[in-house]
Image (tube, rainbow, N blue to C red; front, side):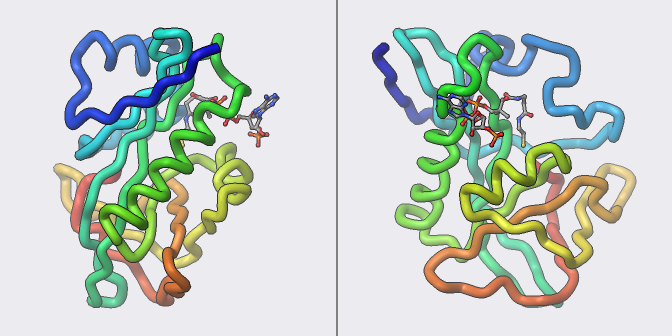
Amino acid sequence: MAVEIKQVDTLDAADRERLFDWGEDIFGAQSLNLRWRSKDLHFLLYNDANLVSHAGILRHVVKVKGEPIVVGGLGGVVTLPEAQRKGFARRLVQLSMSFMESEWKVGAGLLFCLPRMVRYYESLGWQVLESPVVIDQPSGKIASPLLVMVLPFGGMKWPPGSVELQSFPW
Ligand SMILES: CC(C)(COP(=O)(O)OP(=O)(O)OC[C@H]1O[C@@H](n2cnc3c(N)ncnc32)[C@H](O)[C@@H]1OP(=O)(O)O)[C@@H](O)C(=O)NCCC(=O)NCCS
């Protein structure tokens, strides 16, 4: 089994379809009807030359109680069904985490997820944010209907207080 990881700025249509259109509502968030933001960088994992797993990241500044914090956003984490439970997503999430910390040198990682994924990300060091998070949508600002998890880097402590995303979620 040969595993190769590539890094690209944009996903082409074929890769996008292969990764995200293999099932109905694979992220379980369709009913929320949210507008999402695209990522700045994509990690693609190929198993025996077949694209099977993806994680996307972006750089962004959020405000916590009015104070800016530079975060690395993680999203679009997916593995095709036939390649699941082999640790591929874990590899890409860990790569994303080290890239955000060492290359981008952001203060923390930030992701949106459903309750079903919390244990998975907790095992990788992420923590559920208890404070309210306000996200942007075309209709205006709304409370995030998704859980938000953060991963502070380099001993940083995520400050208490409400979070203003100042962006569509990712
Ligand atoms: C969630 C998802 C990305 C996981 O992808 P994956 O490549 O299977 O992930 P991993 O292999 O790293 O880990 C998956 C699980 O398999 C377990 N696992 C990892 N390697 C394993 C192995 N060799 N044998 C058995 N189990 C294994 C992990 O412990 C993990 O279990 P847990 O969730 O109970 O902690 C994938 O199921 C998916 O695409 N789901 C739909 C989209 C989605 O919900 N994405 C998350 C958005 S936040």
